[in-house]
Image (spheres, one colour):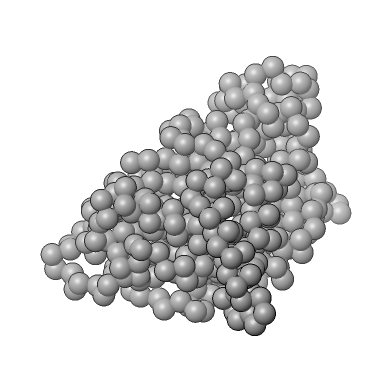
Length: 375
């Protein structure tokens, strides 16, 4: 298996300096890339997301699913697409919480990395994918299909399903990992940051931006100073359009750290273009290719060009709306009742206090944005 560096060298030799989106694509999703090789979130891995903090986040998502299912009129088939599912941690937490919608629940794990997808069967009984979509609005050939068993069912896919469904699509910290181009404002206008070969490795190279890219950057971040950088997140916009197309009724929920393009232009690019490895922040996206995560804050205004979100609030507000305070109070009460002889449930309840602190932290996960598009 060729290394990311070898793949990148070959591409540069054939086509010249490559756009930034190709660097990100290879570094993350090539077979030898960070996610292609099985890297990702977890306490013993490279970074922690809300899902890995503990089971509390999944319990709250289960509560939200119940509310959204109820809003839809409690359909018999309720498809939930977990996009960028990683090893399936959120699914396990949601199902462990036993949501009321479970008999109708068709949980669909979508993960591009084959190595991470191979972990979906650990603790989850996977079913044939067609079971997840039988009876859903827009699913084809329902009359001829064998009726699936009662929910919850779980299936695993490499990409978003085709068709239209009564569904909720959830993307937790996915869009920040989708490929993007990088532009810099210079004395002569907007330039594109490309990646070129050097005798010792790789380096950035500024080339004139296309007219379309320069005009878009100027609309998104007008009057930016010389040296300002902005991402053009075509990958996230394309994903949003595709995800919206599969929801005939329901909603799309994106949880991520986010900003606006104009705000990013006023900040140092190192604040919103980050790398992570073994829980440590890196500095150079061109270093350790394939061995570190490359992540970019999500530009909400660029997503809004596809369609403005119907709701935009902090993760802390989202979690409070769906009952985190009640769950923490319950955890304290159960712990006090069983502290003298604690069992596993009591220990889980006790951990809710610590988990909530992390999930609500205004300087961390609590400041993430939760964007919702309704159908």
